[in-house]
Image (tube, rainbow, N blue to C red):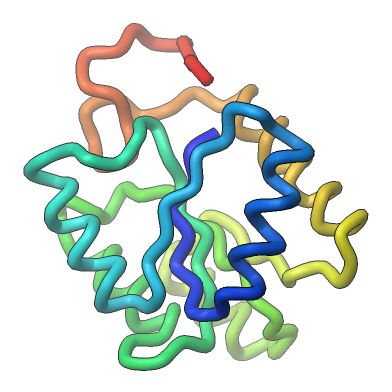
Length: 153
């Protein structure tokens, strides 16, 4: 499971890293601290393919410079990025945030759980989901020339 996390909070990232180690020994985590840095990484990746494939994005909403909603809207408006798999991963339970994320075609909205046991359950679900899904080939999040149906950890 390869995750590109867009998160400004160092502690949240550290907790997520610890949880991933418990859930999946092969999980890969790449981080951007806000939407602007994430767009820079994804733009560079579209040319140089530096991120591990396939991957999905875990996106916080409340960040400086460019928040998660602004980032998601930009991703969906950019041909090279519009097919990215994006799960909002935030503390916000505000219905307006949830609705806005889905209007911008978020693939899911996950409220950050409290406590390591709850986080591990969410990570296990994401890992299971990731393992049973077919992944795009040749797109931003896909594998170039990979056979259909395959997934390598």
